[in-house]
Length: 313
Image 1 (cartoon, rainbow, N blue to C red):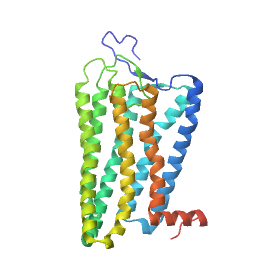
Image 2: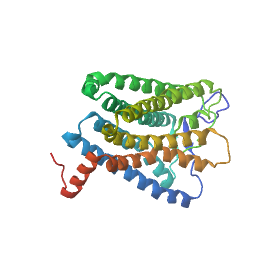
Image 3: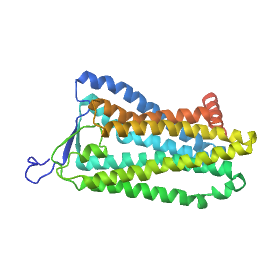
Image 4: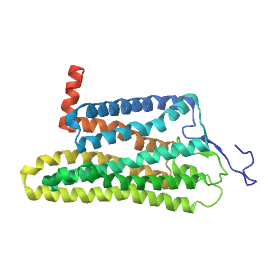
């Protein structure tokens, strides 16, 4: 770290100051966060194993659930171990390079939570609204355009906000967070962060907001199609209900985390940090349970595996 930021120098090492109170407070939080991390890791890894090992689950819908489980599995890995070390051993230092790397992986992988939900909505749209052409639309070569375009969009936008953050000079070195969230870092900059704010808001609008608008449009069309066709199609709606539950939970936590960090109020720093953690960690614990319980084929295979200790062919 440069010692005198007032002479055109910049900090290159930072301190994560959230949960910086009494040591007992940190040790108390260590237990629930470790418990949630283990639930997320084991639950999502088990769900991935069930789907990949069962040939009957190799349809687009289940492979998308598997992709969501992979996102939920990997996202906590990039911040929870550092958080646990901070709570237990007070290891709060992080380099600028480490901070930018953590920011990229958390935001890039996290961006696919809404994108995969969009892909699921597209899958259900074709399955319910155009069932006779479902296999044509959902063939990998045809569906590839739905994969490439959002993936490139996510990568370009997240690389942009990380690159812009890395080009700043920093006059402060205490990050008011437990991981390198974009706004938590750029607010430490010496000069203007107008461009960072613009690109950050653009990313919020173009990724999660755009995804949720398209998801909403898809499900509105699905509901109209189901109610027009009568009871025979309503059974297909059950899988949509599962996706809607996951979408609702993700959206609620995303909005709370976004508003709590950006609206100036009497909420303490530790409270905002807990909300941000829950936004990333709670869905990772919640999603495999929801998909395992509400998806009949996955639930049946889980029960077979738990009873027999092996996966049926």
